[in-house]
Image (cartoon, rainbow, N blue to C red):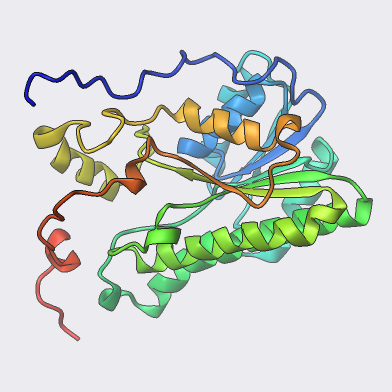
Length: 299
């Protein structure tokens, strides 16, 4: 019907609104990996707004310092510190927790946001390309999670972990075999560790973002959006809109909050139902190589 009204999902509350009571995280320390840019910074901002002391970790000192200043200016924020860290290195991971302890205290909440990704036909992935993504997205997440868990187990204190995943952990991700495999591992870690560590008061949940455009998107994602936008705008989303980064931050603050103390082992998808969309008649299959503009495979 051409005359039916399509409104999509309503817009979220404005930037600066909070999903939880003011001061929910007052006196708590939150560590966010990849917190210097993009969605990691947006997540960190919502914890800051609720009074958290923040430690943001990443690989680029300049970006981290700029983000630290920005987050410290968020109304309601506690103390904000930054630490350079390559999460693929377990010794550097331990150093970050030491730095957090010295500056702020043992983190009460860990947000595993740091990841690596780029599109590629599976057959073109070199061993180094595979490792570059899997070592950061899965192994790095494990090193951070392990260090957090061990320190809380030793201290006898509760904690909360939120690991950022991807919907292709369930569906597979053509063009992203390396990332899809790694994110499936992250999802499994959420489910495994929630059971292992639940008796000790440590909750583990996952958070899957949909399309949340932001200034720090990688070039390949930006180019894909630009190719699609002229023809479709947001009509490719069941919500008829994309997400606002603060919406992901609100979900993260809920999952780690006292109001979700019986929620663990769960992965929350925040994407306006886009990953569940199916057509009555599936579109024509276009091989990944063609979608990426690659020529025939050359071994």
